[in-house]
Picture (cartoon, rainbow, N blue to C red):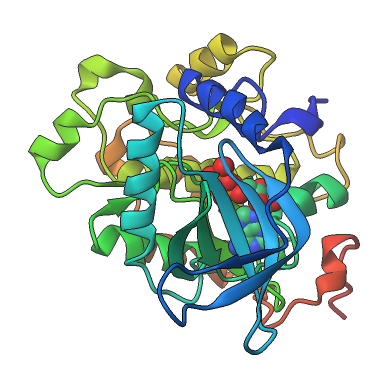
Length: 328
Ligand code: ADP
């Protein structure tokens, strides 16, 4: 039905496009040992390559002292643009203050040779994006579990006036217990007041997940509610296997977003049944009027999580990255 391969990454916004050109700076791998600058600082041995993002490359890093393994995000200290440098600084500032079971834990950041190294909690099971690609779509119990964990993380962020602004399946990492860990705070912002919201009218996010008020500058900025829109997109995508506003070009995606034009798959097209409760939850998040979108607390109270046969698994096996779990 859709070009599913591309759906988190396609048609990146202009800001992300400038980011990706700089990732080429990372053609050479980092040194095998990196150390914190202070006397007696920790040393890490760099291990397996984990992945590459807009402007960072990630490797496993083992703490020399005890062998404990982390994710090391490597960013060139000298960035080609001042704007990117500022963004990275905001990312570190915001992420370093967060501490929550469903948010990638930030440990420290330090400079070594010509790069900055960010030491993060390792998420060895990939992302929800990888999982949906392999599985096509997720089962209702899995969707419930991920949505509840995601709501807990978003509630925590919003309570601290942080808007993540780039929630998407590719930024929902999975730890060894298959718990969600929200990562990549590269577009996060503090939005403390209406005045702040008014200043927030930069185009940011990933086209498929972007809220309508971010597209429309005349609306006077955006708030934390942009994240709730993204939750709606994520929920739809986990249920169906494709994001609701998927299109070939960025312009077409934006047009569909503005017109709230999306369709659920016909039941005959897929073998998976999507209950009305799930559709209603997505509909409530994909509201063009941002104030009318639910808060994380409202979402977890939604009937979708309380259906008569609606189980929420307490544990998930890592095998469900590849295969539908057998619940009975
Ligand atoms: P960027 O900010 O440049 O987009 P990301 O934070 O998205 O970089 O990281 C780039 C890639 O590195 C991710 O797509 C993922 O594959 C991997 N990665 C990032 N953080 C972790 C982590 N905590 N654990 C495991 N892999 C990670």
